[in-house]
Image (tube, rainbow, N blue to C red; front, side):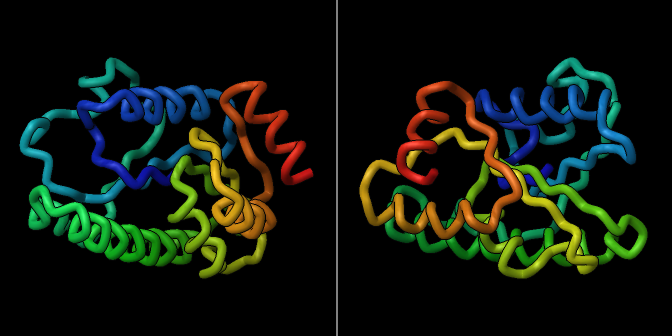
Length: 178
């Protein structure tokens, strides 16, 4: 599982990601690894994520070195967007490198993420050298405008599967993307 977010975090998605990993670890052969960026997080410095979220260590959590310049942007929205984009691309390349190093040992790799940007980059980089990499997108947002829907259409074609979080999204996906 690839999560382009600080773990642990004060936000609800951190809880969801950690518990999803623990649940998958109960059923996935070969184990589950959560890859997250190594970012500064003074609020949770030194806190064990497994203890924080109250779950057993049934999976591995690896922090991937990445560009961490968002703190520099302050309240400047444009700079936040630029630095956020750079951080996302850097993280995706670092994750791809990590997966490619591991893929010699595990010829079949499945990547699950709720971050469409990172997944798209990973699919373009062909993360997992064996060519047997499967990409699953866990959809939490739905594209609103037509241009974004067209971009999502390109993205969806690169995915092995899409996991939706409600029936409305499933119906919309069927209507707009077949």
